[in-house]
Image (cartoon, rainbow, N blue to C red):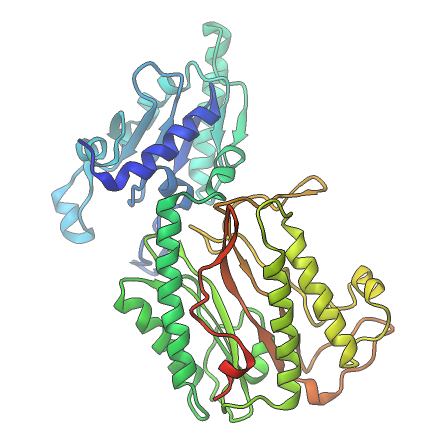
Length: 438
């Protein structure tokens, strides 16, 4: 009897095998990455590989062959080696790979070339995603070319290599129950961290002190940062991916914190912006109110059946109207949106898919048609306005008064699309003007 925790993986494999028809899918695990010299980063499995297998070791290959009479799911793994394991940790090994991970068959990874041809023999195509392991990419082309040579004698075999993600990624963009529960958990952990940060941040602290407090919350619950935490005060808030986190915070600074937790391979992603000294300046408050209104408008546009662009368009309209009211833009709303005159102030989209990857897989458009949202999608909703001292307005737009310089505001929540609307997974972190001030 297989352990209950692998049941979601078994269901995903069943659906994937049905989707690929007479193809053979081959997935390569993530490689070990070197930090410096002989010191390696902590291993993180390739997300596609983990999604279907739950297997958390490097130098492995998973093969899915729905047309094979006996083995539809096969793992190639590192065998047990006690001497090696003393240094680098325990391995699952070949026998346990079948028992623990539900494989129909398992082999040592060194025997890949010996056994793979029989799982390609009756395939009409190979499904593979070319990744960063160029050596293995080259091997895959070699396997395909060998199969093509045999095809002239055998009468069958794969004639093409097809992008595996076209079948797997539409599955990943719709979360199953176990994924949703895990993402609720990481959202809750990140919410705790953000709420703590808002209580401890004060003038003369360094950004990295706040970062340490946030990431301590993650670590105490078994997780870690989903991405390099952004703790950006003052003008740093206008740098979208600021990660130095080494500036001392001032009394009149805004503090933009973009930090999420990863646990069990799933991620959260939250941004909040608040005044370090406890009170917004008039200019900061004006920008914050526009971004908050834009985010609420965007959230209102997220619903099953809505297209992916609708919440972005809603946010952009509110931002353009707000910048017009402040004199930071001049003109007519529709024309400013059409010309993208707002881009110097708001240069990114209003969100992204979220899941096993922070910027998760899944199409946003098919040709000219935007993807429709459906129950099980999880996405971020994160409008912002950034007024860098180095901002260059578009032609025909006014110069920016220096009183606005250094104001950067982003508000981001993680949103689950449900059958009846949405569930904001990060709602435990407040964002009203009143809640941001103290």
